[in-house]
Length: 273
Length: 246
Image (tube, rainbow over all chains, first blue to last red):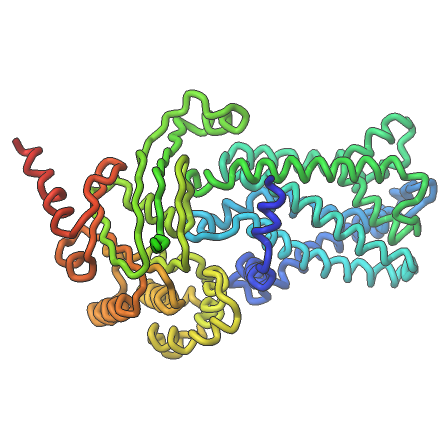
């Protein structure tokens, strides 16, 4: 089965993956004086713009209703945008990872699934740094600390694993066909607006629509961050059992699909890249 | 008791899929490569190579030499049949593959070492001999992107040759630096051969092969035409162009 193949490819490769993930960060910002710091500066700047737009400029834009309570637009956006930035990076970067690291496939005997692991870990470092900045802002604004903040580690880990598994399928497919890569790039903007980054999926008027939104795993993570940092809601809160079950169902399904595609394409990748 | 071969090819076939265009390629994700042209690079290749043997591989361009080497180094996989390799392979083929341009020479020794499956201790052991062999001076602590192509090759060669391989794959077409360094490489390869390492040598030159190899495999159109002494293989290899002229 594909999953056992992927797991055995990772066995004893911890050091190698760590080294390559740091290298991936360096590579992205090579030649720049501030180096990998750019990975944090860019999204921080975006956060600054968010703050300026929603807390200063559009002061009258009002509050957002989230889980029945009103939150300032800026706080709501901050807790949604930080995970979203990571998610979009994981989806787009994950699908490109094999093509960007072609030489590992065509010139070396390298466990290809490790490519997805080390590239995604590079994104994870950036995300964690951003989360630290976000947390400082939240403390300053009086939303944190709280014991529920620790749930961050669960949501962050789940989010990382979910999109890593997704890339098991998307990376080989994108390496095989450039059209598939373009397909992914073109749906990403749509995903932003369909997901609850900018608006609350929990507070839709139609109960049916609210349920349908459970199908989008991005909502699970984005709202999970808000549950951890804003509303202090437990991960397995009984009001959200359906959502949790839907997510885990999708996750298990994705593991099968992802490892299936990985296995299918692994051996022909050196020939087509 | 028969000795186990260190490299074994059992009726190995390799087909490459030739997609007409990107559209056909995209469609192939969902269909099972129907109507896609195939090129058969190997049509049932079988041979065994035992520990300590030096085998030359000869053949025209497109005969399947590279495909065989890629399978031995574990980069490519057969469409049918079985490839068994029992031992650590050092390939003097893609010397600079896996280098990270933004890391220093020393960091790259570790990176490449990991990629070749060595542990920290093993790399530490061989690090001095790599640095000495590559002879890069102060550049060893500079990022690899500042290296000239010759320097990169030298570092790549130094790493590959020093990992204490059990199987050494050498492609003659490889050019490493100036004449002096080439001689140094040749000497190092011969030194390794004397320690009993198994060598696969790809070349067009009869002299080079008969100097190092006792056995040669002549490939033609994806099949093993001759598997015997170097003289036998070259007799067949040289015969070909004469026939064409008639």
